[in-house]
Amino acid sequence: MANSQDSLFSPVEGENKGDIIIYALSTCGWCRKTKSFFNDHNVAYSYVDVDQLPEDVRGDVLKKQRGYNPSGSFPTIVVDGGNVIVGYDLPELEKLTAF
Image (cartoon, rainbow, N blue to C red; front, side, top):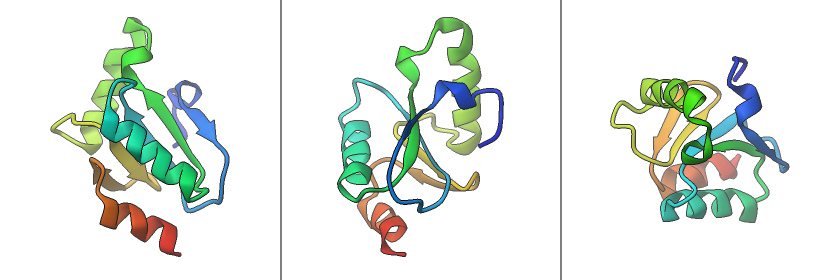
């Protein structure tokens, strides 16, 4: 995820299962559940709580997120810049921790 928005994402340490980024909302229960899943499985990821961003950058981040998930729903999980998981999709999240 090498772009100008890198500094907006907060890294979480863990085992490398690919470049995993999460577009989330601080008020979203499914977003918290997704982060907890990765934490519980010791998976490294980066996240941004879009609703906590300054207004001057929020629009650009939402535009980038909608490029991955046109519905704009949360969480949007992007793996290695291409594979997208929308929502708390437990079977797909478990696939990430299986290898």
